Image (cartoon, rainbow, N blue to C red; front, side):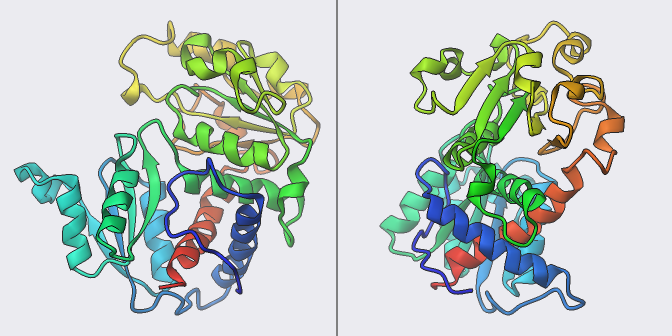
Length: 328
């Protein structure tokens, strides 16, 4: 997999180029083929150490990164905050330096506070450590790998053998739900608008960041549209991405009730009639069944791409680890 990849860290998609997206898509295709073999392992990162440093709970992302690292033959260090020296007063940077001293080459970091992966990357660069940092989700900021696996899922639906950005040019993609607290939505806005898609956000005003309340102030005003009602976002949509209500991040009452939210913004089979006939549904998970989306839609293999998202996550994260680790 020849590539001209030069990026050491993957912290945000805000300044990703179209060429970088294309490189990730094509690299992920190669690793998807590896995962289909009887022996699902390659020696690409043999001898390197990947430290999974998850400071907040995670099932899909953590397991996906761990499996991706194993498939690349890397050695793995798993960090658990509950049993770490953080409980004794150690700082996050000192924890990172401890893993550096143990020989970590790549640190995959998830934290409930925005900016932590960037702070660790800055410190690793200051030390000239050569360590790469991969942001696995930080606060309300970014979740690059989730947006990239979503991009891979969308483009492979349109062309399985040759996924590429141009396939999404002019496609209408509705993102529905708790956009205010969603780092996934923020990362997806960057990748999807770069691909030329029209992104339509739909949420109650209380669940939209102030930046998006007036779309005319947004840098993506020709590709990003904001709706306070569901119907205009779904009208003729090619794809619908529904987001979880992140109750654990809510410090106030943003909606009257879950029942009312579902009545106004829940994705149902009847509401999908507004979309294109071949519409597909995505959800980054975990899901509140019967709130953001009905169970029958989640489990419908003709409509739901949720299981494909999970499966594609391993191939895409293999691609990311490979790209930042292959130059070491």
